[in-house]
Length: 220
Image (cartoon, rainbow, N blue to C red):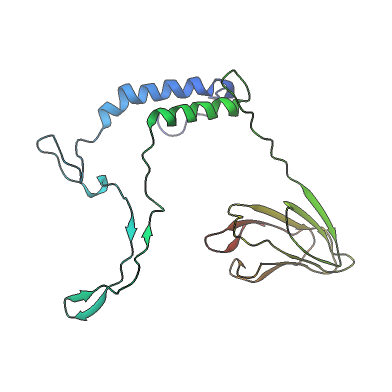
């Protein structure tokens, strides 16, 4: 069989852990031994004729080192701190721990069984209705329904610091005045300080990006 499995193949979520165990067992005992690479990159090789491949190396850290040209072919490094970037560094975790974590997570996601020690929390989206004229700071609101019939609705999003990945949905349900969405000081909304919902039934879904200090529009 090539490509994606047919849609008629369905696995009961309560049996997912058993299916994954069987799949990993086939991978470990049959498939991987046939496909394993016979070179070891920057590590010492032990098989005669092994080829060295750069992509086999392990990235420990990335250094952004500025170079100052002194003369043709001569450079110097300025006297400053060199940041050590470890965002893409892999971590070596005990495989037994990963196995137990994965199978336990599957059991909990299935919602029962003796292996499920903790029941997953139920996520509930709260709806907040606001009526203009009003100006307010968005705090814990997740879905905001704005009625600007009687006046402008102005709101300021929370700072992205500490909010990484947070989703907020804002919808205008009326005609009349505007619904204005402003960014907190130091943040931007798609490169702008504010966003306006200009028509009835317009909506926007935003996600916080703490690293870039930005709210991104992911749906509208």
